[in-house]
Length: 143
Image (cartoon, rainbow, N blue to C red; front, side, top):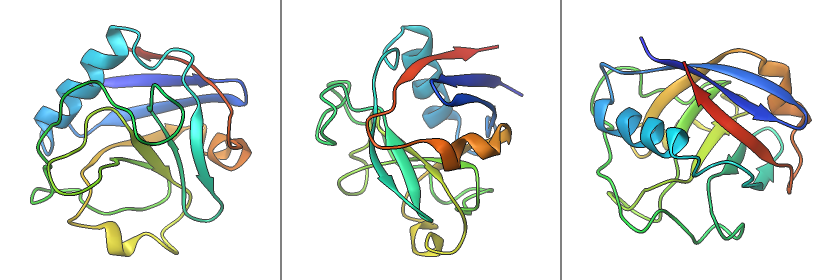
């Protein structure tokens, strides 16, 4: 199982990837992380009791890596619960680098089967609640 850590100014989030359920999405996120793509980007969208979202190189929510990846929403673990990382997109198969982390299950059930859940925070869940719009992703390190 692939693991990693998202380092932020508010603390760190240790994550475990869903390698078997979403191999292409995991491979894309891991590659971008290892390439330093996420280093210094911000959480440009923070909606309390919903999600924190980052991964846009422009900081506006419209940017990406210059390509799109396919959604992997039909496999196991496609359940948007607290701490789940999922790919943001502007429609099916349009994701690339933007991802969000769920605050809770309260307002996320409509995302199941629509956005690809590809990892989960296993340590540092409290950091999700500390993140504010504009906070920085210092780096993402893959173990």
